[in-house]
Image (cartoon, rainbow, N blue to C red; front, side):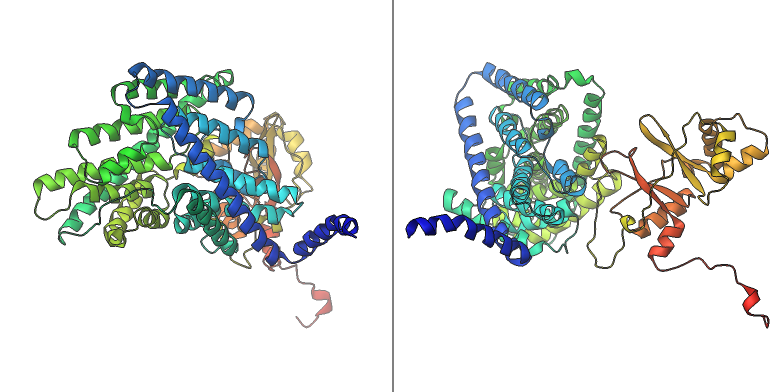
Length: 592
């Protein structure tokens, strides 16, 4: 009898899984719990591993040469592993997570997850001043994706679990379950009203409970209670917001510029490039050891008032340099932790100066360091709502909220004005990825995919006007794609081809015609006209108005030169239910 029951067990499990597949709400609930628990355990292991390795590598009172050699060797080892085995594990992981969501249908390989864990562990333990939170998001999202793929879930279900795993990871990495939910919706999905909100909440709460069961109930930073000394002190927080915004812009622009310089180097040097970051960190760390690592211990000392003005200024500047070079050179790690470090030092600097000038009406530098963390995060990462809630959860001090909102809003506004493209979007652009900033999940919004049609054969740039005119004469298309061996290069108008033909320019090439057209049209049409499959049809209409083309190529987000099809004005009108009026037939209406 027991043997029969055991034999029947696999079939019962199969039936259970099939039943859950048919009932998506139950499946989402179960997977949210499982992913939250598993990701929580993995992230806790990641925290403990990197922390203990760092303690072994950098013992108290260690020799100065160790501070130079260790990050250099760590960068060399991780750089080789990234180049040879785990090319997708470079950087923070946030752009890669969003690329998986919007380009690869939510698919992240388990190999990349393992690579991110190993390479980030090496980087952080060796003193590279990058954060663990961004990589944790990628690891959590990757685990969720791997589970979904193993269960054979649909493409939509796999995609929906990416933000679930990301929220669980950030909740465990930062001990901030509410901020983790907001970040997952605000940054990863780009929609605070996403339908996966329930699953994200469950996973975040589950991972948070796992963290507390293993490491206990303790905030990331222990700070003294905050209180507003005087109403005039709010003016100092305005100044802090301005300084935080300007510093954020400087950091982002430096990081992006350095990354662009490294990208110009030969591909064969990818494995050695991270050493430049490791060596730079080592040299700076030889003179100022506080630059090494993410530096949360130093942040806590500053938050509790242990501030020397010259020291915090130097640390802010050196951390910006060290983090920028380390990240731009291709080391594995995120910018969450460095953002908080830089913000705390900037805040402490402003607070120390304010307290020297107005000692009776301002709080100590520690309070400003706390607000500075949020201001820098809002300016660098560009998620103002998440930054307010995150600082509140990190400190569990509600009285800081009003000054925090003032500084965050100002820093966010300045960053948005002076650095138009947010950092994660800019990093994706450097990698040739075109990710949406805000997706929107409103019901009834029609996408370009609903109106796409197969692309016509593309013209080669070397095609002559005579050949082109022969092909377009019987077509209703008003613009045609032009592509070389590497892909799409632009669009050419039918009327321009016909005009050139009438002027006897049969031997002119399409490439030459496009050059003439660009000069004639001016700057308005110089950007490659295109739309993406997941963009609203309204965006396609706006793009047509901007470019003057009634036919637009629909291109891949992974490579804008790969054409998936075209969308025409007529197709868009049909998708909206608006048909072009046919010519009236008067034969059936003699009275008209």
